[in-house]
Image (tube, rainbow, N blue to C red; front, top):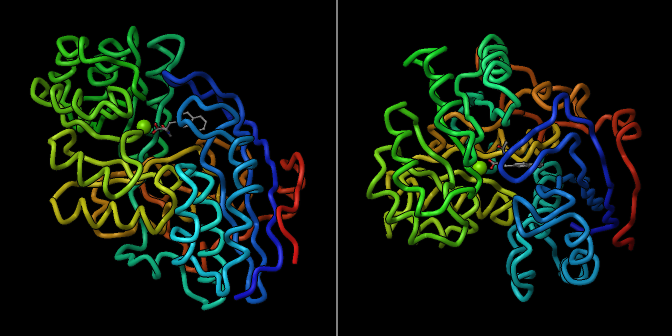
Length: 369
Ligand code: NPQ
Ligand code: MG
């Protein structure tokens, strides 16, 4: 495969409703896509971060800079570029997993397309459909929250995840549990908003039968999570803390988590995401696929990953309509609480030119042969 063109397409899609987390409020998804054209096929990937380093230390403008100056030159210098060779070629550059994931993912998509192979098949999928959960942002009032959750349950989502932060935790969780009953599969995500001093407070969540509490403490506070796990009955899931298969192995060995949220962008791409799946499976640790408000491009690829056998919990992969009135691909729709795993070559979706025109802000060639 020869790389002919690497293009960065900045996009901005309005969200159907603001998404508020302990990191802030977003009203639009403002990110960029990477399109890699090879002599055999083209591939697409979607940047997982935001304009600002609030969820992750990575952010869009920084990713663009590191791609242009440090990552793209190393990839185009490869004699035979292939997805499996990207991580090693980029290993002299420290960090920047989300930027690295873009190149590996776009090339993996192109490679799979060139072989007419679905990404899901390449990764080792064992399912044709995956259960869809939904992540529910912080709302102004409990009444708003109950209405929002009720709407999602009517649509068929099989699991509700509530974003929590100090001041918005016990009350919303209690209200949702009370309103929808013990059968509701419910969990919470703190996005690092607490400290170990809050252990006594967080323990009060135990009575609500949450499947998990996600990332209560700082990303680098594994020890804090070990201590917190000793006082909580609710299983701890790590999201921001897990940036590699080694991180997963360490967190499991220390007892810092009982569940892992796998986000391909955060860990440098689908190949490392699969290794995390493998490490967790070997330890009997359930995993699920996290989300970054992906458009159809990233969503299709996440569905391929979530079809692996160790993804035994519902994912943060929702229908297109959860975030967007119009997606960049054919919309993904819920069918009985599940989403279909695309079965066409590569990610199995195509970017709709009209939608791309509508939502793209700018296009920049990072490399042209
Ligand atoms: C999480 N995602 O699991 C993230 C966090 C998150 C679906 O809950 C813009 C883009 C804003 C991505 C806010 C979900 C975001 C974002 C929060 C991701 O922790
Ligand atoms: Mg999370």
